[in-house]
Length: 200
Image 1 (tube, rainbow, N blue to C red):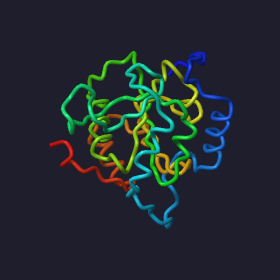
Image 2: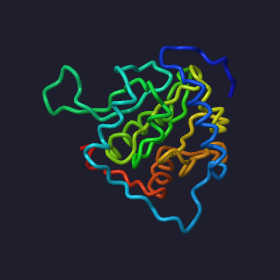
Image 3: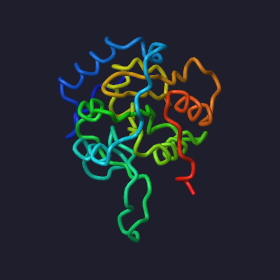
């Protein structure tokens, strides 16, 4: 993957966030699953925790370098009509360090067509895991700082983080041919089972 010069935007990462990301990398086991024998954290969030993401996100944006995929009321629709909305992430360090809230970074590129439906599948996962995992789309062509910090060599790829620590990395390069079904299996084995009834 080509590394581009960090483009400064209103929501650009601060040096402290980058240092924090690098610190997280150095304190984790090479982006692999956490050591066997560790207790599995609870994946149920309190009502207060479900709202915490709003402190670290801004307006709806489908072209922001970092965007949280949030399950919210769809603007302009009847009350109760919800769907996945993209909100610009304004503080990635804060989002990643939220207590008891898992974050899945979805590394992708706005310059590649989603021919295999991975992005659509990730949006479905964001909906079916709402309240357990917040997915963040990371456009590596607009901001490559996180892909560098997490050692991402190809896109798409995913990294699952909880309390600022890497729980698991999908590692798409080592998998060869794979599909969204493999991503669903990976995240389920990581302790987060999607509720497919939320897609009905």
